[in-house]
Amino acid sequence: MKTILLLPFLLMCLPQGQSPVISSDGSQVTVLSFKWFKDRQSIEQTNAGGTGPVAAMIPANKNFERNRRANTSPGERDPNLDTVDGRSAALEQAVQESRVPKPVDGFAYRARIHNTSGKVIEGIFWEYQFQEVANPTAVARRQFLCGVSIKPEKDKDLQAFSLKGPSDVVSVGTLSSKSTNLFEEKVVINRVEYADGSSWQRQDWNSGEVRLSYARAVATPWGTEMCRGL
Image (cartoon, rainbow, N blue to C red; front, side):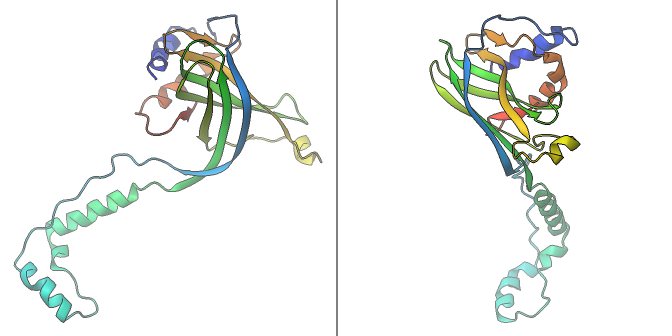
């Protein structure tokens, strides 16, 4: 994502509500297929893996384990738990357990693309669009930023996860429609970052719309994910 990291400077230089005309040519990225589906994923844990203090050695430890096996009784308590270090370890364990990610319900968006250019792609800004059949003026856009490496004439499957579904607000006309296809769907490539430092951007894409969401997306180190939502 070396070239993508250059974008903050570009965005800061842009007047609000305007986009630069980087190229009048096509993106040279062909969308081969796309789909979305309900999914469940876990948010990656941060600052995990720490260990609490080791309980102090006290005289009662010497015979506790030996006597415990021979004289186990209900309610028997490890004397280490009542020490300062023991209570600190229990507190630390509780904190670590609270950080364990829990699966969240959301939506997965996928697009298979082909690089028709002669250059290696390192980053792509794209969006999944939903247009209501009964109300064509209602269009939901799910935008994503992906750090990828796509060689010339090669395909790549982009996948992103979002808590947002096809539409935040569905019109009454769409809900009452008997058609099973409530939306017309398409994937649009907004910007392409190349390994040589060059880039292409769709002329009618307003990069100012993602100024703040882009800053949030790159504010933390990337893990194993390929794409992040904007």
